[in-house]
Image 1 (cartoon, rainbow, N blue to C red):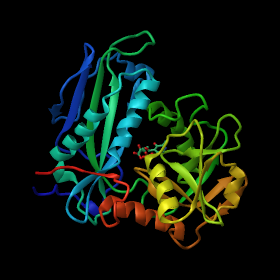
Image 2 (cartoon, helix red, strand yellow):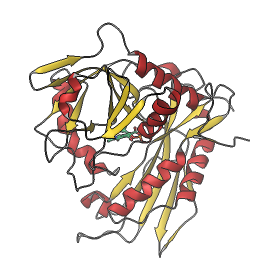
Image 3 (spheres, rainbow, N blue to C red):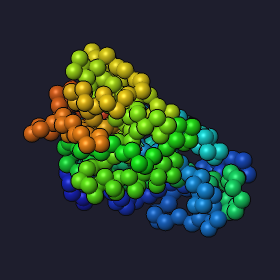
Image 4 (spheres, rainbow, N blue to C red):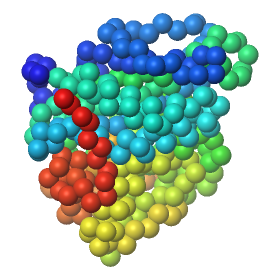
Length: 343
Ligand code: PLP
Ligand code: COI
């Protein structure tokens, strides 16, 4: 099938309409089969719990055209599991994991002409979304749900790809509370962070680095991605926190760091003062991949990790291994790629 006529090497991380999305409905205690939709509009009850009380959660994953021409999705089983956990935490009906994987395959197959070609640096971003749809004005869980899934071809989240970003440690705005919902992928967390990101951008930074809301002492994560630091003695250090999203990219990088690069991995509370001792730092996530950190500003001090170069040696090795596995140029020893049948 002929590819869509897009400027593949210059795609941004933004919405482009594709051919189809899928919808599944939960009604009378069971999930429907997929309905294939062409329009990118949905109809919702104006009192839907998703709209008023934030009863919604979502996922983000990527499909890649590999060097051998096959199409694969990175760790889709992990996203299926995390979405179930998100749904349960805010009392929504979880979408079954096996159906989630089927839905991802099907929506990619249906929109195959939008899968960016190997070598373009772009990928097909898959966005599953679960919404409480019952029109209830009282604050209680919906009894009906809509699971929908769409795709959109994307380039790098931070403009320029493997281009370093400047982070600002945010002390006046919290993204999430320690016993709240920061560890699940619900829309409210992103709304809570928008004013911090806008503030950081207005001051010339690319993103925020949040501290834990209780002690204001430990690093949590960045707006759309987890954080890691590389120490001078070659350790991969990343925060353990109850208020950050357990990133699948970070989970993969911890394995790559330990097993492929022979590094020591520490997942533990990371005191913000440690930024001044790191050799390198990065943000990681599906959209962010690995985005090298150029500098971090905390109060009146700035630590600079990268001067003229775009990426440090360890971040580069992590990036090359991760993206090599995703694109089929590095052996997928850990069976992270799920091949999508395309006949
Ligand atoms: N943290 C936040 C707040 C995110 O939105 C994301 C993106 O999904 C991540 C971390 C990275 O998670 P993952 O690597 O699973 O995409
Ligand atoms: C992702 O990386 O998939 C995300 O959902 C981050 C999002 C804020 C773009």
